[in-house]
Image (cartoon, rainbow, N blue to C red; front, side, top):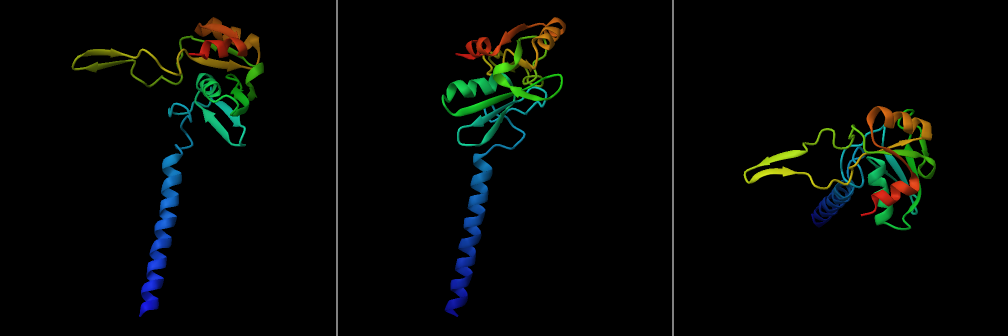
Length: 165
């Protein structure tokens, strides 16, 4: 009779261990369709990929979030890739041209900019994803987008300066 109780105990402990490992992995990693930096949904036309020094690939919702991550974790990012907005092609972030600002805010498109509270109106003062950054493979494409949607055209070094707190 003792061996049955021992087997049941080991099976129960094994099931608890497997469940704990699965729960830990689920809780510690956000879902695949969320930005690893700000936890917002990914927008496939503007996402930003970070190849980390440890070999992992992380996806940010936008170039601004990806660049924030790069600045906040010096030496952790081996390579950064931006999504060319017109084609969806991944291009090296250092060679892309960017439009900062403009009339389309991809990351905050569905967020309410103003919240009504009992004490009064609360306006968002800071948002990691604002002003919007959109990447382009060529400066000409960035200029065309800027003409239609506003904003200013910047190169990678200028954007990194703009992202610094």
